[in-house]
Length: 108
Image (tube, rainbow, N blue to C red; front, side, top):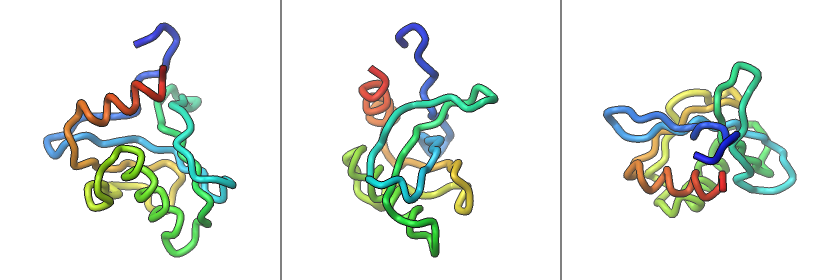
């Protein structure tokens, strides 16, 4: 990890990687932006989507964007927690090294 870089926003569970995401709905564009730290020192992957946070539209846009970014089928990413929050936990059905590689590339 480069000096001064935040830790990766990912934990491993028996079911695979869980990604911590900070969603910015109505963000003007769809983009995976950066790894950021909150005031408590927790690491998050900041993602913007154009969709509005109504009727699950922003969550669905988030899942589709991350599936594309991680080069996975949409069905490989599920919302584990945070449906009504900007801070979400996403379960990823992919090898840890695949997710880690994308996060490391973003951090570089």
